[in-house]
Image (cartoon, rainbow, N blue to C red; front, side, top):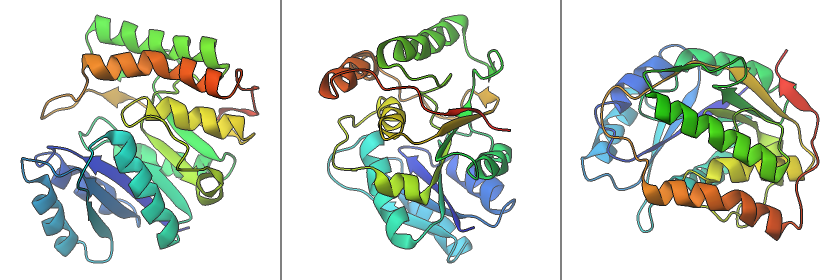
Length: 245
């Protein structure tokens, strides 16, 4: 299977070389770095890595409006055009351990979308303060209550898509440009009657750099579930899914 790993970046010049080495030296995957015009020169670092991994590491330099959701939408379009069979997505800050990528890829044989879940078996988070754990756990419970989704970690950014599932989505339909994009994509997959599965991961707080979380991001994340329900005139019906075998 042709596996492409999409990694959006914004000011991740310290982390990106480590991540690229851990992903590409371990598995026969390809990587697409989608850089959002990082002021710290991450895009130039990515170009250097593309020379180190010819034909395996690709770089997209985005201009214009910034946002995680916008970066992923452009990355998804590139992935579909490239012919990738499976499309994974992960953060560049080393909080998503590449050792779980094979688990997500394997689970995609049974599910249309696979989430790397921090909450499938209790709480699997390292180096977060208690208030951050409480906020994240509440956010996922909040999403389930409002939308009808049954996934334990709808806000996870560590994922693997089957090409056919991603191709079925109307990428022009998405509302969110930031982290709420994660919830919106799960909602749209479930709304289309596709199967969403989860595999357990251990999430480790970033080692270098600054978090992109802000009050604006949190506000959008609180509003997004209501926007989805109102736009679609109701909650999604639970679809077959759950933990990967």
